[in-house]
Length: 311
Image (cartoon, rainbow, N blue to C red):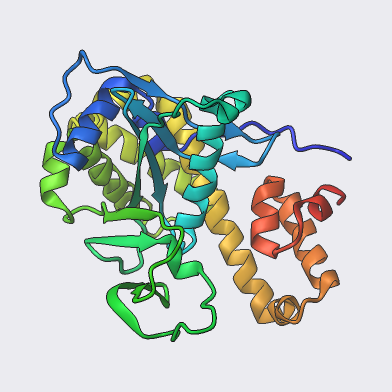
């Protein structure tokens, strides 16, 4: 079977924080710690595109005792705790030689912490906690739907803590990092604050741009504006070309959303809802012609990735 050979492309957020010093500052802002330059930071971000399909945004260990996983999202995804579960299991597997599991000595693992940064256009809480247990099916003797604590409602998926204690739990601290939100956090992490400003400038410049050419011009203007006004200046000057590629990639994904909306109007979405394989395949072929990756097509059409690869 033909395998997807495309390489993982970092987002602007990932490029910005792919640096131990920046990650140390960001973690200090999140946790209230004061780790200095002497505290080691080891980046261990997963890029196993060809092996397990795992692509997390940022993961790193700090001080050898804490492993931090961070995801940046511009769309609301209530399944983030499940994704973090896969990520941390894979990272621990990498850290441990399997035969060590059968030794009598007690293995020590770095303590995990999970963070989500959201800067999409939909309404999102200033700060909330997303829990893995929200995804569990409720067994006999547990009265489903009666929560002990209501945390938030994200995209019509209420994040609840049930009275019954789950046997497995994972908590993700989620922050709204749009401009004007979480001001204390933004002040403590200069790069995070300037990233929020950069995103806002890009949105303002591309407002009203419709054609790919107009959007590309808007992105160029946004980058020039930020450099001139000392917003991520050094980063943008150094990574201007990569930033442009990432912005244009985002435009392509937005175009996919438009095409899917058009498919809905034509009745294709109705076919997808009923499980019409033919309708899914037709949509997948259109998306493939647009240059999307197999993973993006599979996610958009709900087709198995093996089926997409055979197209």
